[in-house]
Image (cartoon, rainbow, N blue to C red):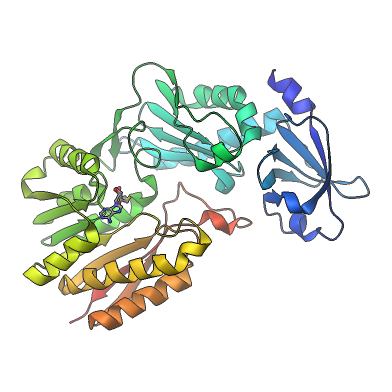
Length: 399
Ligand code: SAH
């Protein structure tokens, strides 16, 4: 089936009476519960949503099996065409050009709803493109989408890990796919520092691009300080701290694969002699360090999402409080803590309350210096605030 067929053979969806607010707010996720009648082929890539009077309200990627039945790309009379999708891809990439340069060749090129391309994530790692396709409609348009990306970025290889849980629900293929030459492993340059990234074995799409600006901040705070990098993954914050003049860096992660990679990344940047590499459970490790009197002038705490689902928020809150309480105890006088939550279900407000409770129990005089969020290559649609998952604080002990 070619794209012309897929784009012309569209699904016709009718919005239930009384659900008009769904479209007036321009939220791109149109849930199955708001849709009444569905006509047209189940394998359609694109759906058009009409009101009961037959007036078109929105058009977008269609998913027959997802609760998010339609991911709206256009509203009202705006026409959704193949050209428009290609144009959005091209303009998202053009917006990123100013962030790239001789010192940085890894960037999120397309951030789903944040670039008006709901369900599509494209990361560039030097000569490799990693694509994440989260729904059936986009999957059907894959050849056209990948062609557009190939034309704009000319990568050596396009890699699709196809491992997002949503793909299973939508009954899409879950085997990884590599289109191009060689293996997906590559070495990236970020702000002049080098990191090995392996999208096939790594977490996320291989590297935590969203933390780039916060890593620069850590680098600027590092001179003369001992640094602790909790949940270090492949050591990115640690490498930046060392480059910024930290006297010592300890990377702590539960995965030996991640820690081995952290060691190689410090090697690549000439800083492994001042670094320690610890495979450990961070919760146990901070207790051990607190007891043994080890202290740090700069701590980064960047755990995985403890709340992957809404029902896990309470338990996650206890986890965040525990690790932050110990991190605060480990800080030297005038020390800095960069602490993060990437749980989309945990609000900024709740995260701030957790940090407050941890500071109280730690008995330290701590102030908020700055709020932290994802970098500029992770824009969030104002109509889809769910896209803003990463939140953090720069805290300072004032004693
Ligand atoms: N800060 C990193 C990203 C962290 S991702 C960066 O900028 O690249 C979260 C990491 O936490 C993963 O590498 C995972 O292996 C690790 N992890 C998860 N649970 C852990 C635990 N209980 N103790 C230590 N590490 C853990």
